[in-house]
Image (cartoon, rainbow, N blue to C red):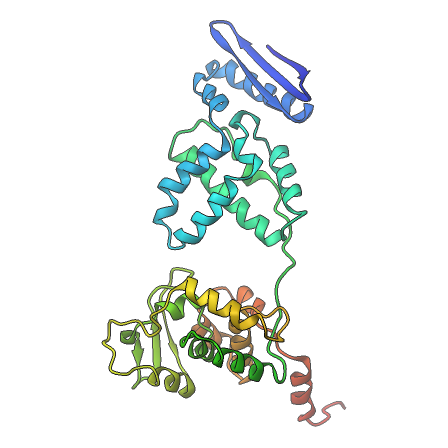
Length: 336
C-alpha cells in the first residue's frame, strides 16, 4: 500500500487505497517517511483514507500562526508582546513549510538552527507559541493533525538564570543616572520596584485607589500569573508614593506614562551608566534578596512577590555568601 522514494533530496511516501485518491507526503528523513506510511496504512485499514488530510498540502505553519494571531492572541493579557513574537515567527522559513512536511525531526532541526543565535529560554518561549497554536488547531479548529510535533520535540535546557544584584556603590550610580533622565517617572518607579519587588507592568498599572495608607498595603489587581495580591509596603515606599500624590483622583494612575516611554528612558539611563549587564527586571531580584536578608520567611516574601511556587521564588533569590558568613560569625562555636 505504501511506496517510498527519494525525490529532490526528500523522502516521499505515497499511500494508495482502492476507491480513494492517493495520499502523498514528503519528509526530510527516511525514518519519518516510513513511520508516517505505517501509521497511515493502519488508519486506512480501519477507516479508509481520511480525505480531510488533503488540507495538509495547502496549509502551512504560517497559516496556523496567522489564524492564531487573529483569533487567540487578542484574548491574552500579554497580547501586545505575544503579537510581536508571532509576527517574528512568521518571518522564519518554518512558516512556509506545509503541514504535510512538519515532523518532530523538522521541528528539532529548526530548534537547533535557532540555538545558534538565541538562548535556550528564548527558544522555549517560541516553541510554547507553536505548541499552543497547533493544539488549538487540532482541538478547536478541527484541523486533522494526528499529533502535535511541537509538543513532542525536546526542549533545550535553559541554564541562563540570572543572579545580577546591585553591588556596593552601584545604587548611587544608578540613582544619579535616573536623576539625569528627562523622564520624571523613572527614578520613583525604580525606587518603588526596589521597595516592593513589583514588576514593571504592575507599577505602570498602579492606581491611587490601590493604595491603603492606613494599613500600609498596596493592592495589585492584575498580576503576571493571573492572581491578584495585596502586599505590605515599607515606609519608604509610602514616602515615594506620597511625594507624587498632588491631589490626584483615586482612578488616576500613579505613573501616567507608557511602557514604550519607560523602556526608552531606561535605555538612555543605562547607556552612559557603568553598570554592566544590569536590567530592569534585576530590580525585582534585588528587592526579593533584600527581603530575605531582612529576615523575612519564605512565605512572607511570597506574599510580597506573588510567587505561588517556592521553587520559582528561589530563582529570584541571590543572597551574598559574605553576608551569610557574617551572620555565622555571630554565633559561638557550638562544636563539642
